[in-house]
Amino acid sequence: MPQPAGSPEMTSATAFDPATATIAIVTYNRSGLLTRLLESIIEMDPKPGHVVIVDNASTDDTTQVVESFRERLGTELVYRRLDSNTGGSGGFSEGMRVAYELGSQWMWLMDDDVEVIPDGLAKMGRWAPKFRSIQGRRYDYDGSEFYWQYRIAEPLAIPIPFAPAGFNASGYKPMNSGCFEGMFIHRDIVTQIGLPDPRFFIYWDDQMYGWLASRKTASVIVDEFVLRRTREIKQHDFGVRHMNASSNAYRYYIMRNRAHLKNYYRAFGVYRPVPFALGTALTFGKELIRLLLVERTVRGTSNLFRGLRDGRKIARDRSWRPMPALTA
Image 1: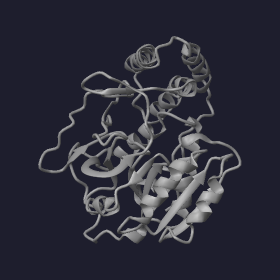
Image 2: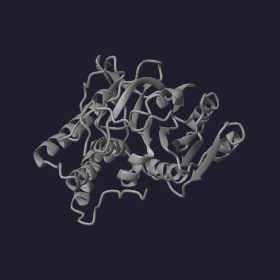
Image 3: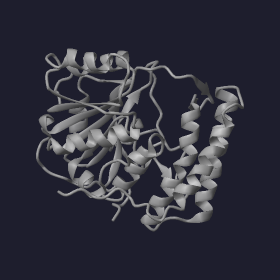
Image 4: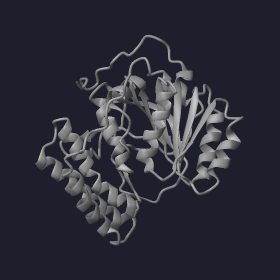
């Protein structure tokens, strides 16, 4: 059952051991960004017990870059090159699987376009005795505070756009979402909810995984800056927040994967047709605004409709099942 909002779940009085943590990185054709991330891991103190790199069949020099760090990373490096591009969803599912099979107690997930603050793992470890699903904070490319929507409106299955940004003296806030750019999650929760679902390919996968975790434990975002984004993304400034540029692939999967969200909601008995449909309509409208204001075009709208069409097939698939729990 979900924990009451804001109610800490004490996991252990034992001090956090960095060697029990694994950083799992997903990369695809961005060896320059991956280099920056691996260089930041060299500077980390303390370091994790393992670094797992999942390569989504890159066609650049990623393999050579990874091997060049093997002897100087300062911790054990595990490299998994996939036969095809499985998207972020497939990559994080594989990264979590490898970390789990290594016996890791903590999995710290991140894309290749961030770098780690040198004491980032120590900062996360301070919260490990209290919580089992933790999200740290990030600096944006320009050094500003990166704003992330850590709460979702569950009936609509969309992020709450203006969730409070400030922290009180506790240093944490309850969340019911997740982001694979920095998710720090305990093995016990992974055992219960299974691996991330590779069927998403991209988009909504980390929100769903964080929501599943929040049903098992008190999930929190903590007031600790532990990552810095290293890739500049075109944005539109609305004053209170920014909206990033997107791509046709993202537009397609944003709409198609609403069907996977619907199926998860059905499986867990929380699906309500009217508010969920409203959430889908709001998502569609947001993507139209993104096209007009950020990318200043209407080309790409067809991908939204195509995603809705293919999503209907997924929603009607009677063989669809959630990702299974793992064997402890």
